[in-house]
Length: 451
Image (cartoon, rainbow, N blue to C red; front, side, top):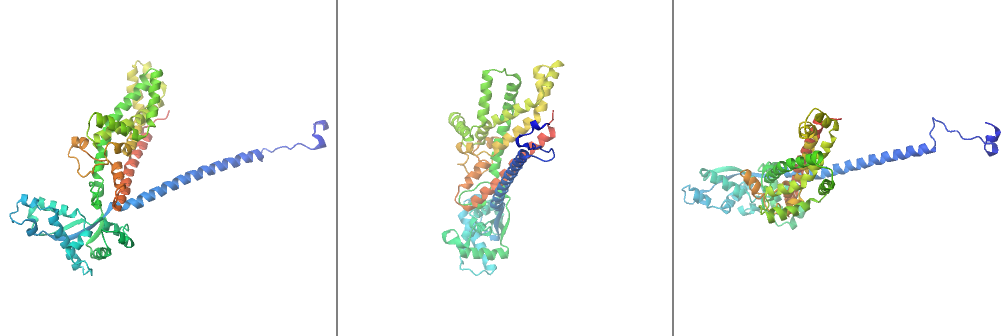
């Protein structure tokens, strides 16, 4: 380098080092670190929100799996239950639940006196607020099933009222009793005494999982079992309709259909249907299946048909993606050895795409299982699911409810016990959804092939 090539003033040029980053490199590295920090913060925020949601669901719903029971010996007075003394089942059936209530109330009062509880509640009728309205029906069914019990003292375990149950679960507070007309402080004092005596117990309640819904006045008796059966029959309809129709449509569009404007229009419409709000399918089901075809309202068959329409786009899209993932060389090899187009698809392509098809189907079923909006419009929230179906035809055609519809119905009822049961129903529904999605992931990882 000569003196003529130096910058004016004779200063030497700044030479950068390969081992030390310059200002631009430092700026890029700092921007990358900030971006990574933003990503970590976003993931942490999402996990925190998920944990808060799970905590809210579990803390509010875990109480639904426990219930307060009262265990007392009840004397089945023949003077009340069989006045003629002939043990005629028809005469016994004429005694309504009103005839059993005094016997139950008297039995509870005797336990109060036996426990030495000091209370101003000295009459059998004073015990009514602590006893579930379902207790009389429970004992009546037991007597009708075995009339020989009349005249004997039988140990009976029946439900306490929802207010007593709420008191033991800290849902009913003493400071709020002034606004509660169903129970007062004297009753809660009696409950405390019977709890110490072992007459009142809070235990696991399997009837919440396997039982039936109840009326507004018997929140402590309500269960999700019949609604689970309704969801099961709806999922059967979705599985047996959406899977074959969706897979067949996908195979035709992906492997056999000519590429023209008509098939392009079909593909665009399928993609659009996957984004349509689910309540639109409910309106369609109400107009077509109930008002036009006159299928029974609130039936799982109608719910399954509506959910089939909603699930079909999801299954078609996932199935086509699975078929596309199979390399073209598989098809070419099959055709090269003399296989027909149909043989190459059904003998080679379809078996290789089966894991993805099953995964998409399970995810579609899980989505359908949690849908509520379409079921609202076909009447599945206007029916109290109190009786389990007695067969396949009854399960498909008789009015019933579904798990999400039942949760919605409980959430809008006035009794706080139903609010607790709505959270408990969400826990059961989440267990089903997580299980189905876990099965989908396992199937994909077990059978998926990488090309």
